[in-house]
Image (cartoon, rainbow, N blue to C red; front, side, top):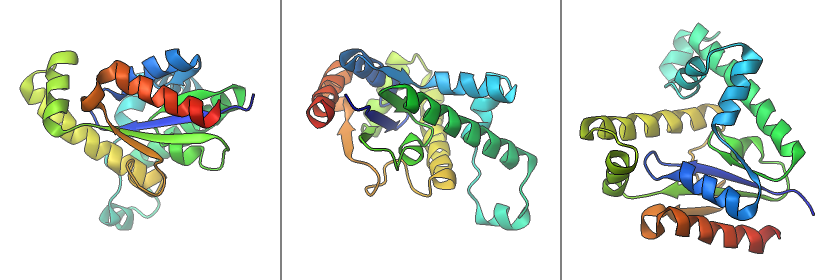
Length: 198
């Protein structure tokens, strides 16, 4: 059977990670998320905390690029992290079918056959409730994280992929997780993947 790949981009608080985990169980394939960060940490000999803080920093600024045309230490570090994660994602993809969460996997695997790019989103209030109830954040922290993480992901995608995580040209399927919950969203996606690839 030919290998296939599912990439998942998501809004913060839309529960994309637990959906990806359930989807991997339903399909019987691996899903990679923090594993990519941990592998990059080992390859670059950087603490995981540094990878996390660098990989989605705000870096897309025409003014910044004009001011530092040869880059800055932080931008150089982010580029090294992206290249390491790109290699790790393609290495995992060579092994077997898999689900990849975030990190521009849709862009990295754009020339691979049998790829389904999914974007998981939810209304702001639903994401806020998920942050407070499921992720146990304070109300203030939830609002701050929703705004900052989504902005950072948007800028990360624009810098390395040249488009938004929810770009219509590169996303095959968008789903509102608040309509179905974790299990049923994963089940709907599993049925689509099976129909498409199996």
